[in-house]
Each structure stands twice: as C-alpha cells, then as structure tokens.
Amino acid sequence: ERWICQPPGRVCHEWLVRTLRAAGHEPDIVHQADENPTLVALVAAGLGIALIPRLGRGPLPAGVVEVPLDPLPVRRLYALWRTGAARRPAIAETVRTLVAHWPAVSAHRPR
Image 1 (tube, rainbow, N blue to C red):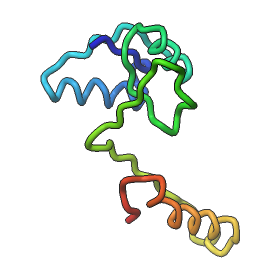
Image 2: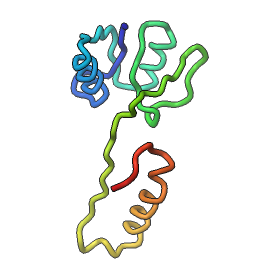
Image 3: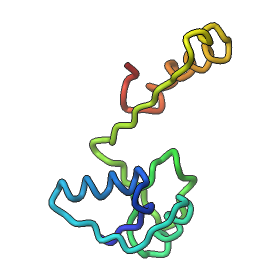
Image 4: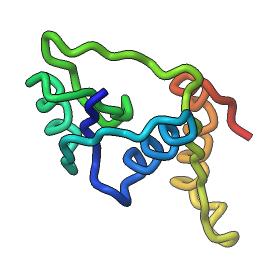
C-alpha cells in the first residue's frame, strides 16, 4: 500500500514503520504531513492510506472509510503531581474524572 503519515520522529510514523517492518513489509511512504486534517485530505484525494488516531481527527469526508485496528495499539496515560499538591480540589477532581471515564473511551482498563 501507498502510505501517508506524519514525518519521522512522530509517534504514528514510528509505530507504522516499526509495525510494518516487524511483519516483513517495508512501508511505501509517498506523502508526509504534520496535521491530521491534511492527512485526511490526502487520503480523500486518493493518494494513499493513513494511520490516524481517532482522537486526532474530525469527521471523515465522503469516500473515506475508517478501519479500526485489531488489536488496538496501547497508549498509556499518566497523571503526575507533587505530593504536597494532592489536596488541591482541581487535581483530585481531574484524577477522579480520568479514572471514572477511562473505561468508556478505551479498550483498556486503568491500572
């Protein structure tokens, strides 16, 4: 396949290259762009296929199809704060909200 992806050094580029090479395929990267809307526009123009995080894109134009990955890639989310700041209401509420909503937006359970 002809691929459209972010430039080298970006997470999606590195994941794509590493995954395809591990499967014995050298990716044919024909276009690169930093912005996800540009990647979608290039796919809509028929110039290739792209790997784009669902949180990083808006609605897809007509003729562009989303195909979920199986298995889903793992993304780890960490909340860090100074020990003395743990009593702050904003920090406590942010952590509570992340833990409460993580299962609804992820295929993975929080640790």
